[in-house]
Length: 409
Image (tube, rainbow, N blue to C red; front, side):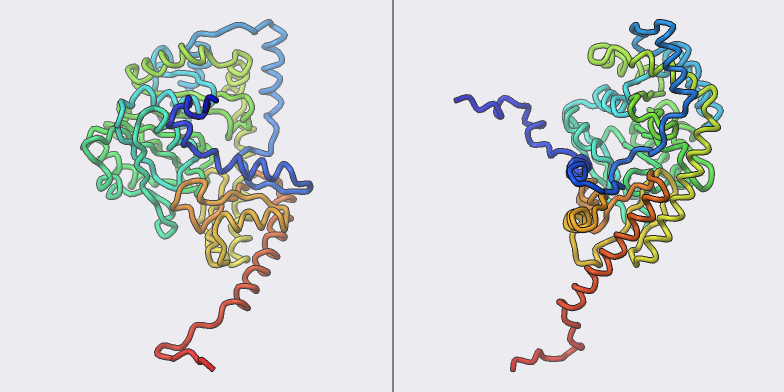
């Protein structure tokens, strides 16, 4: 009998499923669960954007667009990047509209990686970076970050990880899952290393608009970095458009041209109705976006205070909509913590190990949820933690004083 598993690409066969989706699926089977597991806004896409999509359909926009995306949308993207981030790109050949940032990332990796090339990836890392690197034929090189350093990668770490096969540095700040941001000074140090070692930087900036303190700086904006950086952006998070699957890449024509070739042969183009809606989002959706970001910032303070009251150390997230508290003092692993919290209290969070081995001892908690749900979830979580810590205290004897001998009677 044929063993069909043997017909599969070995890279795909050995690849584990997403740790986020596993808990999402588990939570979906339990009634009354409050899910803080998935990184998805709880807001519906603003009406003006939905309306633009409806009008597009009424006007008969049901055809293919240019592979690169509607000219009208690329021009709006160029204007937006310039106004919001001081990044200047030519709509004609430096911007590519993609099916979400996920596709843009995949295109960038496949366009740049030759077999065996190494890609440096700060860890904890978003779940798709390492598998996408491997599927492109590259070798992912995780660089662990620590809570003590606010989960920020340093130039020294990048320098230390570089080998003769290193080609790409993949940055994602504000970060998923930690919420970490990189200040401009550290970005400048990292940029200096990238230039010295001739690295290309893929900068996933999907959460750039969700930066709560200080001005967001793209590494592409720094001296000498524009032409060696591919900026990835999208509409999912800031405009609450996850289901529309629309993103874009901006970079020099050589990179964007190579990505467009792959896009031509695989996706052809992004859906035209989503592109028409995105034009409206960029032209008139800024106020809606700012209101949603203000709400996330309010919830961020709520989340930080809640974890502190529970006695769970948590690095202050400077961006995105995630907190990454340290739960190892409960005596549970990340997986055990999440499973027990889900089944005992019906609250879903994601184990830190879903984002790499350095995530052990942490869980990811999304605060893209209503204040009502957040308050109820933290009430349940606080009770769970009190119970777990009490049991640990009862079952774990106090350590013997230094030099004492255990009583054997």
